[in-house]
Length: 454
Image (spheres, rainbow, N blue to C red):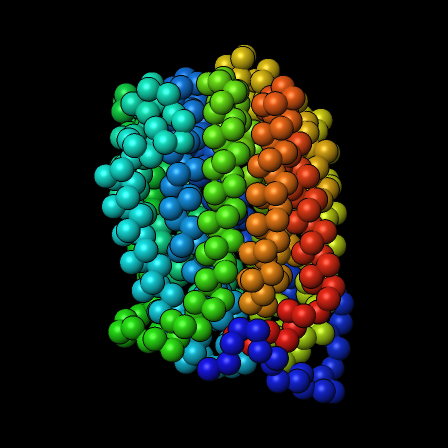
């Protein structure tokens, strides 16, 4: 079996050039459902943050540190979904549905098994893990039950992510969007009821579990009724050849996710050292940053799918045009979003908290985010295009460089050593995005991703 770095077959010559308006329409058709999907996923995060914020600064801090730990343990199946999407899109573009569907089932098998491991770790080791990352006694007491209960529903989240990867790989970005709308809606209704009834953080965790279960059922039902049901339904006997192919693409993606989430976790731990109020503010700034990301994330999904399918059809020039147009559009949109974030920091924060101290601590960091937003579009879309091509090793190295040699050390120096506090942390994050944007742009311009064989 050829390696992931082997040179692919030469592109078919004489293919007609797709008109630029058609490329943009295709990106928009793929991108707008993905934008809304990411908006709903952020809405889920923002709903839980807003509900926790109503319970006080300590509850907000407890929920924030728990969520970061969950994301860290989820890195394996998030990374597997990246590899699965790349292989499904490439196979679908080559009109090889058998391989596309096999990749979907084998990716699901590995990811679900990994999610059960994460459940075990977080349920039985929640307390010591929270202490290890620097949580105070009060925060650990609140966060440990919330973390354990939230982790129980991880396998349902895995199903949602992996079914969505198959659907995006074949060009269906609308169904994952509808799933995200369902998840956010169920989480909001159940969460409001339980928090109002006095269940506190545990009520938020139960609401999250109910929402994940409902969405997993919806995603499985929709793909079962589609022509791509074999991507999730069929034999789950291990196919070691496909597992090796997935590992070549997903392995570096998993590594990137571990590095990325680990870096964000370290970033969070640094923020925890600034005190409960600052950490609570950091967990308000995070959802605002996530909201600002939405258009770029949607275009990133569109670029990943279009690039992968174009390479599968042996048209690397078209893949390049899709990536370039998505990056241009993302940069324009993220600049407009940055203006809004810079001008309206306090109104945005009021969605999540009314605590005056938290609002004061977060206002300048939010403005700092606004200043860096123009480059966020490029730092989001170019990596997505490279992942869609299967160039996950390059992104692994870029993430390692940006997070662990720039973002985390710079946040520590500016935020703690030099005393800039939360603003220093987000300056470090901004420089991190600049690094990712430049490095991924250079990699994309090199064209080496066009010759990767999956």
